[in-house]
Amino acid sequence: MGMSVTISAAGAEDAEHILKLQYLCYQSEAELYGDYGIEPLTQTLDDLKAEIARGHALVARLGGEVVASVRGVVDAEGTARIDKLIVHPRMRHHGLGGRLLDAIEGSFAGDTSARRFQLFAGHRSEGNLRLYRSKGYAPVASESAGRGLTLVTLEKEAAGAAFVASA
Image (tube, rainbow, N blue to C red; front, top):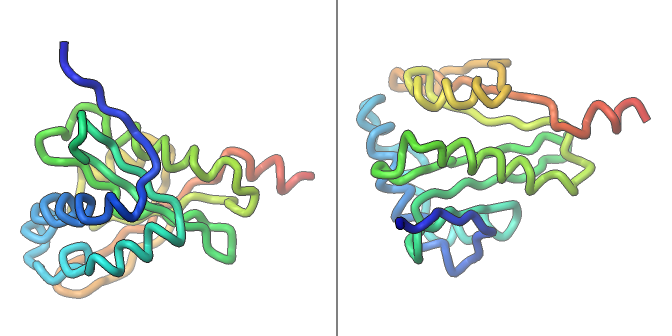
C-alpha cells in the first residue's frame, strides 16, 4: 500500500522546501513564456518566510517530502488572493492541485472579511486555467506582463459572501 498525501499548514520551517519546489515547478512556466526572470524563480527565502507569516500557507506532504504548496492572503478590499499553487511534476494529474485549492479556500472560511477568491495564470497555461475554471473561477481581467505574457485574473465569490452581504 502506498503512502497518502497529507495537507497541513506551512510554517517558516517549511520555507526552504517550498522554495526549492517552487523553483522546480516554475521551470515549465519559464520555458513556456521564454522568461526565466519570473518572480517565483527570483523570490528569496526571506521574502518567502515573510509571505508565509502574513497569510495562509499550506503544504502537501508525501511521507516527509513537501510535494505541493499554495499561499494566500486577504487584502483590505476583502479579496483572498491565492498565489503560487505548485505541485511536484511527478505528482501532477492526480487531483492534488484541486485538493490544495479547496484546502486554501477552506482556510479562509473563518475569515469573514474574505468576500471573494482571486488568482491568476498565464494565458498559455491551459492546465492551470482548466483547473481554475473547473473549481468555479471565471476570468475577470487580463493584462500584459511583458515578454509575451498576458496574466489572466480569475475570481469567484467566497461561499459565505452572499450570506454576509445580505445580512
